[in-house]
Image (cartoon, rainbow, N blue to C red; front, side):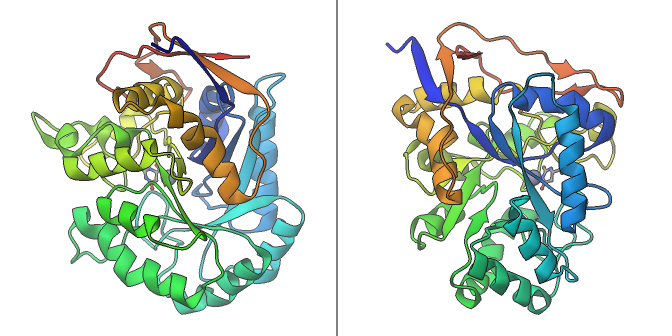
Length: 346
Ligand code: DOR
Ligand code: ZN
């Protein structure tokens, strides 16, 4: 039986760091395991222009623990007013790695997102020209569409027309939650990839709703039925280069989660690298863990895999149930299983 496993250092291709006190509290939990992360721009106000991303990047670097070599990969938040020249300049200078599409109203702080895709067509054409990827929150916001169907309907109504209209555009379907999305990505051309979160490999919708409501398992896109979770597991553990880790670790204080109308998000940054080996081992796929965490993402983004490594050792791992922040406690995702892989930096 494998007792130690050395992986190229992983990257997180979808991460929420927030700002201010929360940023300072959560960032070390990512920087200790991950070399790079795609930083979500859904701050209040959002990170819209290159200058906003430059300032946010400085705040992230200033919040890093002494000696950390973590690299934030910045993104811009696509609005109907986004200026293609500003995006192209931010890309040319190396400041940004992707642009994020939120359908207006789809999730936390998405009010400035896109409703009319005609308005963003010139920006998307420019991104295709310069090879800048689009990260997508793939859910329709039509209130008539059931929340459990919003990803599948997004593929038909938005993603497929978008890919036909902007054939050269690299697109990441982020935090996919359905067998529909897995099938769609598998059969698409090489310009389409997908991230999968840690928590969607572990929970299905029963974990949120059966036996009492569990706000800490509520995130968006919401976890679906078990058949979908199994399809995500099969995709993640297959080694298929289209699928890579994006934790969508999304810290909210307990006070903001435990409300009559609580926030969406699971905070998985601290324990993801102990949960994933457990998941891959259960599925007899430890040999594909490195592809998912450390190789497929950089390859899709045209970046080098990290040179340094992380070692996983088969010894029980302990994580706190919550972290303290100046804004209040943030609960760490509970995977409901013992974690038998401990993580150390080499
Ligand atoms: O669960 C989520 N939380 N999904 C999102 O799309 C946004 C995120 C957040 O910012 O809290
Ligand atoms: Zn997210």
